Length: 107
Image (tube, rainbow, N blue to C red; front, side, top):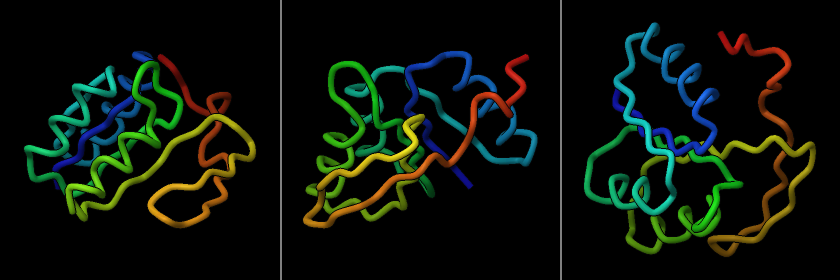
């Protein structure tokens, strides 16, 4: 399975990549939204893991851009917020914390 991870927090991205690779996933990491959006559009990924709060072009914009291009790859949106209500792709979603940095070993 090939995964793209778009996450600006380099330490979190490294830990996430390491964990996924230990489970035998191939992971490409991008720390800038623009660059990650480009690579997500031109490559065939099985999963896109996308941080919502990226500097510059945020994860919501990237998600909308990917869907406008008719790319149907599943997207897992990450947020550190406890509740996050947004509107994109014509639907309302409620995001709840899906991971806790306090529980992750950042070593």
